[in-house]
Length: 187
Image 1 (cartoon, rainbow, N blue to C red):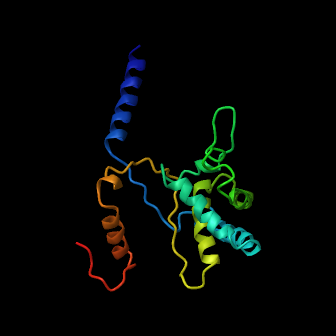
Image 2 (cartoon, one colour):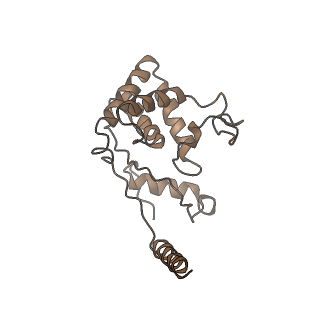
Image 3 (cartoon, one colour):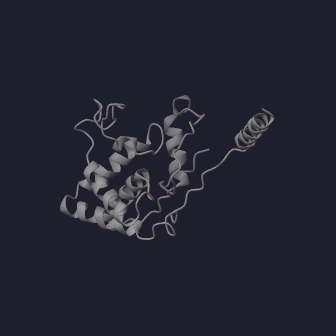
């Protein structure tokens, strides 16, 4: 009896200790360099092939990534098919026959799985696919770094965009990114 109680106390203490210190995901563009070094090249090749056969697939992949990430973080939940236990976002009323590019991400995922099974998350493949698609159709923009991790965004913003002036937020963010014209910086 004493050993059970001791074990329970140790487990409870570990739980309290681990829950007291918040963790913070550190995203990195070289996250898979050691665990799957050819992942990004494999994804890039698959995306370039898809975009070269249908140029507007680039916009579709960017839109797919946006719809996955916009509401509750980038978790690739939009990629899930219906099953007895879930009603998929993919086939929801608002997404059905609207969002495209699932097969391109699935193809890239299959290719990555063939070289590194169970290593690269589908959410990261969708993010890299959006990045590589935008680069594939543009000669004017440099390749942007997408940060990856297997962490799912579980943080809800405490600042509501509806409580502030939308234009003020957008204008301020544009200045931060260097996307402004000759007008003065907003305060």
